[in-house]
Amino acid sequence: MFGGKIGLPELLLILAVALLIFGPSKIADLGKGLGEGIKNFKSAVKDGEDEKKS
Image (cartoon, rainbow, N blue to C red; front, side, top):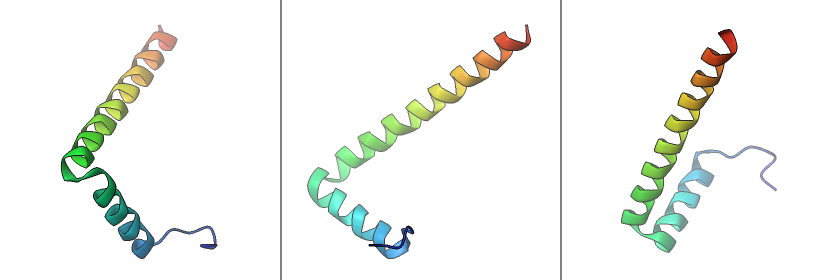
């Protein structure tokens, strides 16, 4: 349907719908949780590489 690409207009539409459904405070909480999850994942990968070298 989109030709395999999601452009800026599609991303803005998705963001607008998410704001309507969840509200701004819930979106902020989701972003914070996602950021913490990525940080923890990177830390775990780094620790795994350090153990592998030892």
